[in-house]
Amino acid sequence: MSEPAVNVLLTGFEPFDKDPVNPSWEVARALDGWVCEGATVRAVQLPCVFGKAIEQLDAALLQWQPTLVISLGLAGGRVDITPERVAINMDDARIPDNGGQQPVDAPAVSGGPAAYFSTLPLKAIVRDLRAQGLPASVSNTAGTFVCNHIFYALMHRLAKRGDPSRTRGGFVHVPYLPEQAARNPGAPSMALATQVQALRVLIETALTVKNDVRETAGQLH
Ligand code: PCA
Image 1 (cartoon, rainbow, N blue to C red):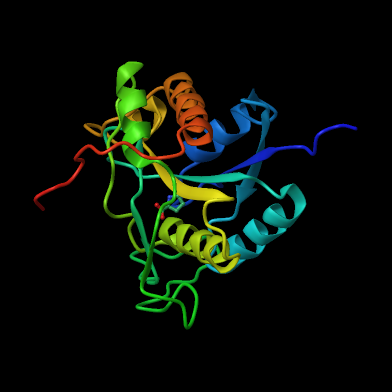
Image 2 (image 1 turned 180 degrees about the vertical axis):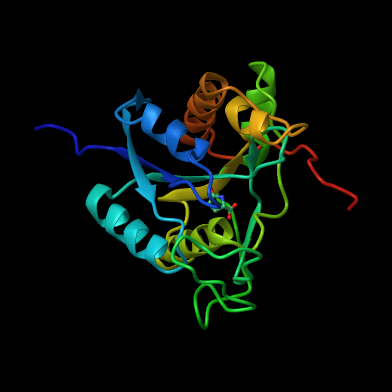
């Protein structure tokens, strides 16, 4: 008898804000089919549209029944790979999404709790990335746009299953690609190959480290 397939769902977003490329999707699709610790990465692109992104996430969760879910998004201006600590139940869009919606102070999931924490081993991830020469830090805000929206919806769904340790999930923001920084002079960037390597390390750590390490990654402000 063959073992049931073990899948890692890795989502990335389509380009937004008139940008022709989104590194989050470039990284995800580069890893589609990669096998790590016996688990196969399944890359799915999400629309940068409030609501519709959640529908497509739900379809992907149903299709792949993943044991680990990592959603990626671009945070232009960040200097490193940033696993997010917390998703808040708040849509407050500074710019319209790709469908022209611009919610202000609306819940991501109506009636949901204020926030959820990532269930990824954040500190171990940052430790392992840095040890491999890959810049990373924990972020304490995923913003209030579509990335935080999908992060919140993901954690709400995993929490409602009642066994948060069975399917781990979280969100990771990635920096601009060099070509994007060239269009935004002065902005920091990271090459695609480096971002892809960082996600390889991150997925392996998320699959193998059951209990996070105790190390500070706090910020004073
Ligand atoms: N970044 C945006 C939405 C899509 C993406 O890649 C964000 O940080 O909300």
